[in-house]
Amino acid sequence: MTADTTKALVTGADGFVGQHLLGHLLESGYAVSASTLELPPSRTVLGPAQMAAVDWKAADVRDHDALYRLIAAIRPDQIYHLAGFSSGALARAQAGRAMQINAGGTVNLCEAVYPFRWISPLSTPGYSSWDRVTRTGTPPCWGNPSPSRWRCVR
Image (cartoon, rainbow, N blue to C red; front, top):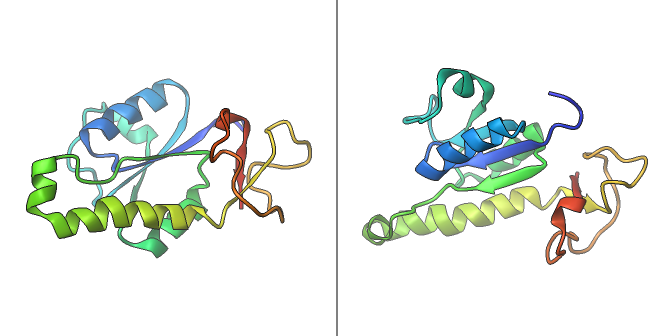
């Protein structure tokens, strides 16, 4: 991995969409971390070389502190949040659990990411992607038509 390699985190990486996204990210040259409830992942469409290229992490989106530690350890440039119930029928059958995972897990992830601040465009000299800054306010990528020009800092 070079200094310019984009680091991506995929939650729910052992799901159907997550597996295919992992393959695409790897083929595109990303450094990929993936979170699942259990390790090793219960199912995969990835080949052995792709499985070995992914930095697998066990994390439950219902556990706020675990998500914070995950974000702090990986320091991803991009997060693809795919953890959750994708079947409407299953979500209705397990409504309480679906709310904890789909809604509560998303809130937990947002809160875990919140301590990491945003700075101005990538061309800003003197800052690495994870330097601490004192800027406050709304991260510019929220509503910015070109979020890829901004980077996350803690």
